[in-house]
Length: 229
Image: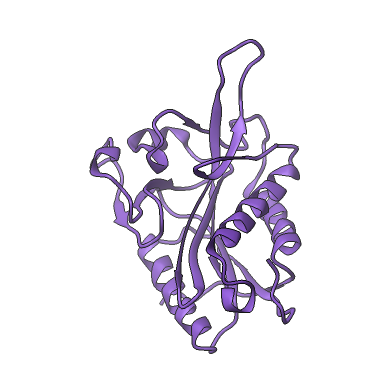
């Protein structure tokens, strides 16, 4: 899903944890600037402190541990999700007018991006009909079927510019997912690269994500981290 004009996307990485409200403010301002032609596209990789977000389809019953962690309402699609240290969040601010005005194709491209990045670590990411996100088959030989989610996708579009994005579980505290029903799916688990036995660092995950993004969406150019003030 490349740009028709070949323009590069700014690629920014924050090395410190970013508060969720500050990140949302930056995203919304940048998305508006892109829509108005005042700024170029950006992908912003970061970590949040431990928290839950409630997407526009979140159900109160899916918050299993009220008060355990801060909860923020989000304008992205989807239900409850967890963000925290060891999870790489990628906020994706792309202009679909310059690419392709097709929401389904955009989500498929995000999934393809994650699957490409996972392949760098010999992890086979898979898709499931009716379920957004990327999954890993963990069925043991002779055992019952089992699959865990390793990456979530939740996006919003305004004037055909995207914001919010993806989250890839590299080495988060998976116990924090017990406080919610992740994405409203009670019958499936959550995993991470480290949980699967791959001692991947965030730096290594970032390199795989960058390479995968360029293969799916086009070239990037390094950018400074957004100003949170």
